Length: 419
Image (cartoon, rainbow, N blue to C red; front, side, top):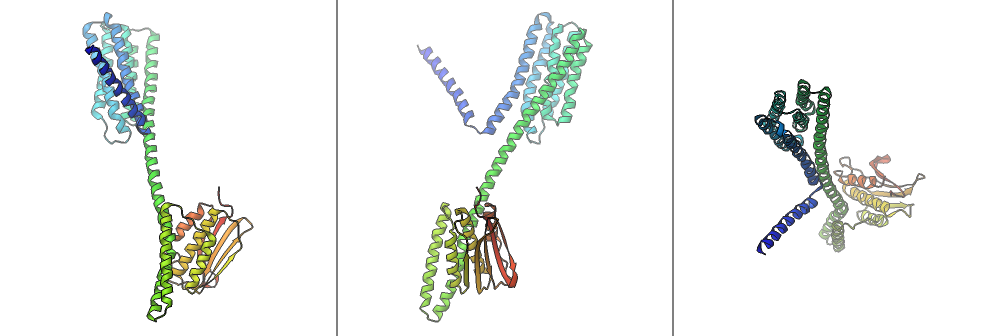
């Protein structure tokens, strides 16, 4: 009863370990699963070679002399072990590691050639039957795979041809029927080509998966960087105009206070309102729910500019624009207003909104009082952000001097936006 319980417990532990390994494999990344599948497939080829060699040795054992059988068995069975070790060491090198397994490669070549030579000599001396020639075929054919992982394609192919040629030459040197000799030569060459291509293609697959995984990581990092840029652009759009207005009104309030005017209180009250509005807008930026309303921005631009002593005229001849188009043009109005306050000594500013015959919504902001030492758009962050917004809708933005010493900001967007 106790032995039965122990046996059941042992089987349970083995089952849990097996299922645990499968669960770990299932939950691993796609790259890890592909790597494990490819590695164990190649390792399995070395195990299969060892099994074929062992089967041949067992089949010819009764007709072989002991010394010859033992010598050939040692060399032939060491070869798949070295092949597995070389495959394991050559894969990292093929995937980009600078270290090449030179010693393993040299040992693999030496044992292969020694096995072919020993088997050929033993068959020629009658110590092994003619059926042992199959060992020569396997030793020559299975040589190509690990070598093509350890060396570049041209050098690896040249080296892989040496045992293949030696195996074919051994077949023709032995007193075998002509058909058997040709069959051995063809089988060795074709099998070496197929296995060499299989090893190389498997390594190439692993390399491609690595590059795809690296590309996905790069894409993720770029997405994070793009989101940071978008967030910075949105903060600039929100705070740019409001901080300019706060600075302007604070300066005005200070001057009024020095004169003892009661209007200073009204200006500071307006500063307080704008500051609270900025706090609200920043919270909306963080939450990702913020949108600019075109008509609200037009009204806000007029109020801000007139408060700064700049006459503002608005010509709105467009209605029924999609929400995305209105939001993009609203940001153009906000950024343009900010630039007028920051970079111009304007007396007037005109905002025109129209629709062209080709179906574009066009918004123009034009102001005078352009300073010669002022760079339009400051450091360019605001205008660059606007171009990104408009480009997403198939639109464009231009800014530069216009006739009469004015400065014009022009935004063009397809009136229907993009799908």
